[in-house]
Image (cartoon, rainbow, N blue to C red; front, side, top):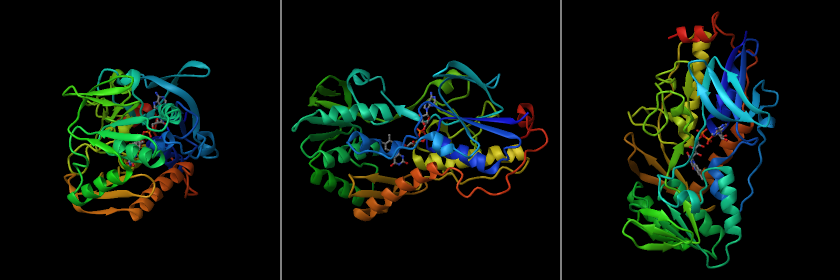
Length: 396
Ligand SMILES: Cc1cc2nc3c(=O)[nH]c(=O)nc-3n(C[C@H](O)[C@H](O)[C@H](O)COP(=O)(O)OP(=O)(O)OC[C@H]3O[C@@H](n4cnc5c(N)ncnc54)[C@H](O)[C@@H]3O)c2cc1C
């Protein structure tokens, strides 16, 4: 019987990992299945662009995995039974159960509502394909002078506000920041950011935590109101509840707690990567949810899975976070390096050069997903003699 590897989620971490596994393991004794809720690869890093009216390149996962040996199952994951080694899914043909010997969990994240009243009912977000499309429709129907409030001064909030202000100069765009705009950037990069906001005419409400959202306004913690025909909630990402409900050990965030090899600390035949993994970086801090972290963690997870299945030593990938690369519309950006302790270094790259670099990063990430077995070696590795579910458990 072949060793069944099931990858949950075909986003930046899962799609790349599945291709990598298919590239390195022999199909003679492994069977790789990817489960994804939607038929297309969603370029989440461009969803604020989609909401602003830009059309994104469509990448059908069926085409991405064609000829790789990876089986694609279009279905929504509804539960995991890690004791039995099964995943519950629901799709076009109804409910089903998939059995695995090794599971790689990469279901990513979505918007974090933080239980703020009115967010679920009235706010929009750019964290998923359908929510970004819903926002796109709403913005398209918003006439000149309409007010848009982006809540959150994180990287996604900044990218969203600048993208909207650049593509829709007829709208009045504002951003509510709980702290200071660009507070985590170096002083020079912060000045660059402020200049960009001034140039684009974005109003900034600093030290303004939003405690409620209504149909046409948001209410700040101190009671003052900010007019908003459209409120875009961008106050962080939250992971799906599937992992916590399945009995896997999770952090307060709901992310799966993993060791350095991305293996679940509670269930050795389960691995996690990307936004849903609670992984500690080389500096002893949890890796931030980001595409860069999704890259490092999926590479570490696949390397560990392959090593344990083929009976070789588990290699160690450096889990680093180098910096933040923030688009400020299409012609400007900030690339801010951080030090080992995640503090911004004084040097940053800004302007068109940084925008070109960011554009290259986004294009490269999309291309990598579209060609998941690029550079496939002619000889793929066979499994060690006892690669079954019990055998995998036995390998330290
Ligand atoms: C607008 C925006 C801009 C961003 N910009 C940047 C940036 O510039 N740099 C950066 O590093 N990061 C950025 N990020 C963050 C980055 O997109 C995420 O960190 C990254 O997508 C995480 O990759 P992942 O594979 O863990 O999850 P995802 O890419 O979210 O993939 C998860 C996959 O799982 C699938 N899925 C989810 N739930 C289920 C289910 N129940 N059943 C089946 N399938 C399911 C989804 O359809 C998806 O295919 C941005 C995010 C957003 C929203």
